[in-house]
Length: 333
Image (cartoon, one colour):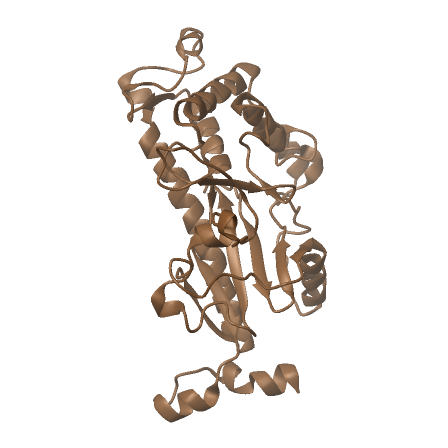
């Protein structure tokens, strides 16, 4: 949402577990793919951005709760490639807070019935406005952060499925693997998953995934000292050297440098206000966001070869595409 873009793509196959890190790549041109000569370049960019995390396929017990019953027979099987896009709901929420603060809105914690932090100094100085029309509810902005992150992950999977059809691979989008198993919430039982770090509290139903150390870290402690530092880091990612609005990073406009130079960075008071709101959420609820996971994994795309003979025997004509019919000859002959 709002071009925040926090997602990264993890995947696993028979050769191991990988991440393709494209979140912070700078596009080289407005249209990355225009003709066949771009294919080799894009493949090269993708390979350079891909890091191997393990030499073994992601391994989970083939039983509930790790897999849904109806996916036991076909999910993450040998020979398949399982794509696992993830998003940082925490950073999404932090960026949405920044958008609201920059427009003068005040955070109201409708879970607890109070302002979202010690905001009176920012109200007095006019950084934010506490009229009823200028309050935004914590529940609303957290739902927005979660749902827009989920949409982004779904679009990634949809694009993968479209490419699978184009090159003649079978597969589908689904949600039949328990995300917490994949991330590593059952590590104490010897089921390591991907090895993500979690925080937990006795009054939580599930632990909260916050990052994979050194690979995919949220803007939450312990990866930052506190949420004030998180707010400063977000501002630097947007307006600092190499940031989104740094004129030197280029862009889609004919005069990108001049246009980017007109983007006003957050003032120090706005950064402090964003940090106060974020720290309030983290201190009050022990996590950020308060009611949603910091790192989101929910939907998957799996690719594998089709058994064409099965469809020829049991399905009506047209059950698969011509690309599927020609796949083995075109790609493996």
